[in-house]
Amino acid sequence: MLFLNISTDQIYIQIEDEKINLDRNNIEDIIWPTLTKLYRKYNFKKVFVLNWPGWFTNLRVGTLALNLLNSLENWKINIYSITKIDLFKYFVKNNELSSKWIIYIGQKKNVWLYDFDKWNYETVKKNEIDYNKSLFFDLVYEKWYFEKDNIDIYTKNEKIIIKTNNKELSTAIEKLEIKPEKMIEPKYFIQPIMWKQWQ
Image (cartoon, rainbow, N blue to C red; front, side, top):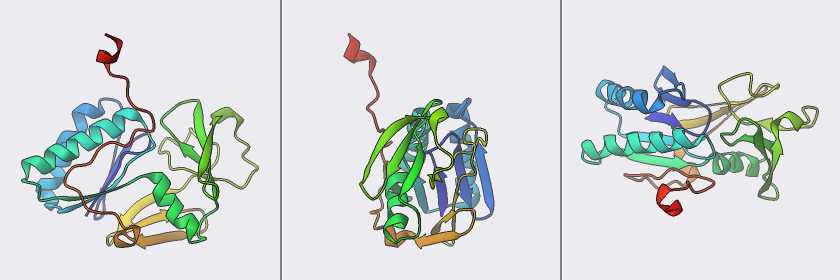
């Protein structure tokens, strides 16, 4: 199974022990050859996608490249797509993680302060985060983004794993009750503005 995280600052791809971080610069040019090379090497039949919230271009090109690959391979790949919010909610509901999170949304200055008990959020300035509060911090690969260590997310033996400073949590993909799809859409938290809307 291939793991594709398009919900943060870089696109992260993992299959077996191979881990690849793709920087957002020129992502349109590098994701397609990376995915096709991995497909030829591993011939994977499942992809687990962490989809939204995140950087707009990563969401767009990540889903586009994966859908194109599946169409060219006659829809042999089952795609399991879940948002970070739904994934984190699963672990919070099982009393394995705190309910208060700082969530990366693809912006330099703003983040979400998410309350999973109330199932809502507020947008806050990144430079106004109170690091003394008991908060979990979303995964961002560029370490300068937060002043505090964040989590890690990866897969192993078809389980999704969240690793924090003091524990490692995991669940089988099936327990997340995600239906496999042949084509997925990017989960934008705001709709992109199309040029024709301004004409």
